[in-house]
Image (cartoon, rainbow, N blue to C red):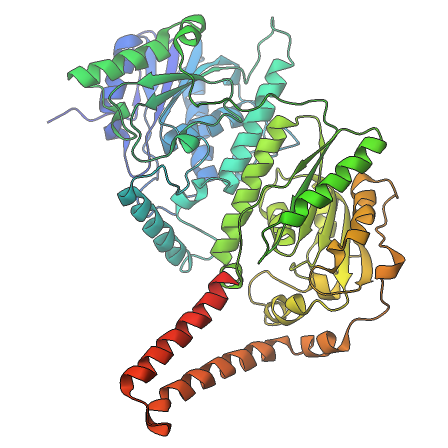
Length: 577
């Protein structure tokens, strides 16, 4: 029987501490051959290999896991140390935990605060002694389902998401741990931003001083990663200064298998170099991890404006509004960059599913992190319409690191009671403008119904306005759901977003109406009944079709064909329109 891997080993003169973190669904026993290679290369290093709560159906929180790891290393440092150096090594999900562990050890940055469970955010005594962070097939950008995955893995990941969401229904406020490391999820986005700020702070320190945060970070890439796409393994945003090394004949899982077979020895040779070789040697042999590197940072940019579209919208207007903002910014002597990326067409049925909206918020935060890396000194502002307003509101609520200077909402589907005062007080937002339309039946009939029923986190701010007095509201812009996007209003939006006209929003006088449209306002007072009427009508039509066999003497096959066509038409409207 193979020897079990102990949780902690005191070895030799205990000059170093090496921490090994295993992958999702695995245990410390899976790191046996990796541990053996560490022991051979560093005979005077203590080795810590904790078991992590990363089982298939684990509901553990990543921040709780990291908090426990911090306590373990603190204990080792106090009882067995101090050590001359610390090395953090993680495989797959363990690589993400290793990075977060290092970020937390180096101390909190107020621009991207830690979760309260991670403590006060003060630097650890051992932070400056972390010399290397080695990531084996690390999911550094989080995971996502895309065309890079094999068909089997894509099906398995999709089923996993559905099962995870179903299980979350029985654990309110919790989710399976694997969902917390999706691309753009809170843990991933905060980690990437915190890593960027940690590196910037380290680089600002004099080279002759101890600089916590500048540890050599090495990513070992399996030559054939059959589980996670290259775009998720490689993070050219926060990991642009990593040293990337290819590991031959390796996939996502077996990159840690370093036995005495020919392939195991090949993997071990690369790993041992990553563990012991000088930085200069590793940098000389590193591989280019992607066809093209991420663009160079642009510190000269003063303002970054996100312009995000809504549901049932391809987003073509965003480019036009962005162009108007850039032109006005140029006249003001500002260097303005705009982000108008699209999350794709978003039909009504998907919009009312919380999981689908959360996916779009994660997409948005992935874009936000990239922009933070590309424009490190810029102020960020936001213009959103419909579901775009929800993305910003949910990001502010869920992501402590999300910060915007000025915000413009049009056709908002956010709840009226949204706590803007809280986010303004915390510094996540400075100024907010909300354009309320005179005849926004989309918001009045549907999100308002959910707000009335206290169902989900949608609401009628685009129809009724926000309750908060901190919001500058323009009432009422003539038109329906997209009223505020009228070309005559672009200058007003640009004025507010760039701060040219002060802190109050305005609109062109010809666009303003004193009252809302009665044909929208009155039905909106009873918005849930509209849902009932629509459902009743759909059922009645379906029932009438089923009765054609009896009432009109149709053949059974004719009734069946008509019913199938009707169901398909309804489904098409819900999923495509």
